[in-house]
Image 1 (cartoon, one colour):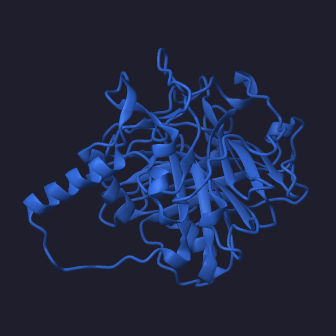
Image 2: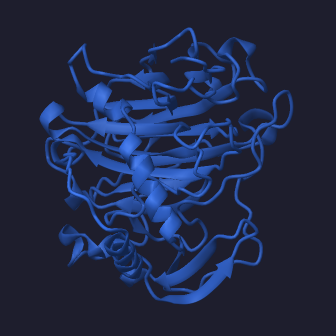
Length: 383
């Protein structure tokens, strides 16, 4: 089992447009190499400044108007929104004692100039391994959008809390762990916001993922669509420090909400405006009108010939704070007004393999940040 990395996970999916086609044709190594070079030249935009991190990644400052997002055909004439129309006022209580540690970004000496955004430079290894990770994919959004009770979940395991009510965004704090995984597995924690019927189901998601590839990066950051505005937080960044069993807890704050004027879905990481998914990407019956569901917790994948990896801390949720992975600080926007509040309706729990992974819900709490909190995870070992 290899050591894993922590990345900001960012996905956009629409069930109606995700089609996987199998092909039996073979591509020569020479042609594949040329295709990778072509993709890299297309994805990596000209850098104004560049920095190398202690982990060997290269971070580029690129012109905000020349980022990958604008390769998307629906964004050719898009006008960048530099700030949300209304910046939401939410509970800003991120003390180490209650929410678990300091801000998990270390970028001393890295600063991009005005008019640029910071991005992680994509390598050939990123492309190859990201393609492999995408072939595994995430099954959870497919599961929640389907009414098919016989949906094949082989290899996929979840321990989640689900809020199934109309909303326009949500926020959570995700504790960060370093589960051990093999090169064909992943273990993740995230918040997903979704809406629409099965045929028009759409979702956005953010969090962290540990995979056996070490440098896979995020699911869909290599695809156009997400408009970045931050000069400080690149997508695909390694999150550290991680939580220590019985010791210091580290967490990342994730907030996603719909701008009541533009309709764009904004992503904040801690208090940083990272960027947004433009409203033009969504259908009126999907996330264009708002969301129907929020879910948060853990997901792992393992092929059937391997025992599944650990989720979260690798310990069951009944061990509690400092020993089990958690998601706290859950609040939602109930009206299209950018005002976050503790929901009056409770969440439901879902764990499809409770012998290996469990979910525990904190129903009542004296501290607001722990209301509707979730402890989740387990040692794995399922096949």
